[in-house]
Image (cartoon, rainbow, N blue to C red; front, side):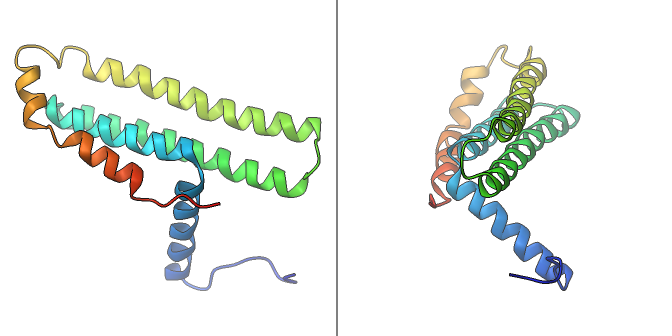
Length: 150
């Protein structure tokens, strides 16, 4: 056990640990992998729909919000599970509220996405979709690109 607080020596160490945490979360959390694939698909559809730069920026922000909330949920669940390996009602509430926050972010992102894409599917949508046919492949690669960890 460490007698001093857990600290990173350099910025490079901090980035390395952050990347390690991201890989662990993606490798172990099915919901996060799904949200990454959904976010990649939404971005791809944004390019196909030719969303303007402001709408694309908003889309990126809501995707990031969902991913951040899911990772915070994952971190809280891991901490609570470590602190309370046996059933504990208060610990369960913490986990439920964190999961609820991630759900609210995801539902909000869907609502924002619908608003951003509203009116973008007119006319030549099928022509644009055919031109962007590799988007589903890209989303699948992102989903499968991170190995599952236990």
